[in-house]
Image 1 (tube, rainbow, N blue to C red):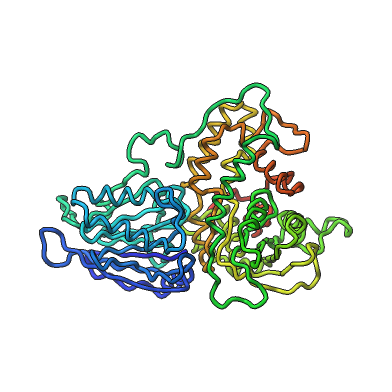
Image 2 (tube, rainbow, N blue to C red; image 1 turned 135 degrees about the vertical axis):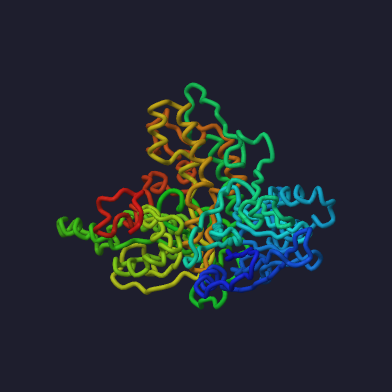
Length: 570
């Protein structure tokens, strides 16, 4: 995870504000660097456009800190890279810093005829699998390329000055500047700085932006610019069960995704003497996160622990409801009454039973109402330009989970009155996001089947997967990276997504056979069957619950009780 920023201006480039410098450094605490370029239009000799690049680095790849911005000594080109290139042209990247490799590949364009330069750069970017946002200045062509990966897993914002004479890009918004908007994840963009425009307002920079599709041509049928969606209807009397080949195929492809994301993680700076956890799970105890934890155990070295970060909030409304219960029915404290805390402890116990030799640590993150409110302005500024009550309720949970400070449980999964407080040292966080969209885990998927059978369910799943890149992954990235942590999404690996959307829908969920002899729900049935196969019997039968309700962040403030999730934050 890194922080990247650039300002392009036809006048002097102002220094970035101290607040923005601090925000970028929070994202990348291992290095802070800048680079400057002056650009002449072809018909001028004096510099007309000035570019200031800023990068901060969270070093998680390779055997050294790759100091950014990355600069080419041969051409003067510059790359600001915030991401993880897990594969390039289908080949996994190991034992090398991915940013340096990407710059080497992009910079090969200086050996290519000028008319082919753009195609080379775009082809190189299209070959990358992984989450990323980037700024690449091709010095030979005086052109800036920028964008986010196909699924929008990393944040990149854009703001143009009202006069049109400067434009800024940033991982995080500088709140002293207005007009920030997210760069869409629907392609690569380029900004031509090589020549004047013929319009009277030749300095309007945004007018120079060109969009280049991820799939060059004929890709309108490709879902999320990744692959074709299988629309086949099921044969008669089909049943999805443990003997189905799709269960083993799912395990194979999910393991391939996880290997890339949990192996070879460097030791964090200033390691703690009592723990060696380099990976933590954003852990609700639900199906998606518990399957990730169980499979991660197979690849994380035995000498390392795995932290399970479980967050719960003091919601004043829930306190009132708890007081109405009989004393024997009340939880030990308000945090233990949160649904995610209850499922989290059950899942923790099941993981300890299934993998007894792993050092699991359950970190119970308890957030009092007053503490949440004291951080509200920070969370609101981090999630900007998202600004609804639902955004805030989800962002609260992710923000405090990523901070990783809570009560430590290792030997016992049950509540204790005075456990020690700990901070997870893990800089890599695994998220289960994406499983519901891929495997039919939302209530609307069951409703679609009831309303229109498999044809309508297929349409609904295709729609959900197709808009993952338009959703809120940029918001989540901004909120969690604030703590110098990198969130990784194994369910959103390109090859994994390609496998899932290429599989028939009845091999993922099984709504035509609602009742299963082993009590496995039809939604996400193949993932539930995998959990059962892995020894996670209780997890396989756990109900779906949204994070804002499971952690009790929804409608914490009294004035929001009657608000819809789409209401603006006040």
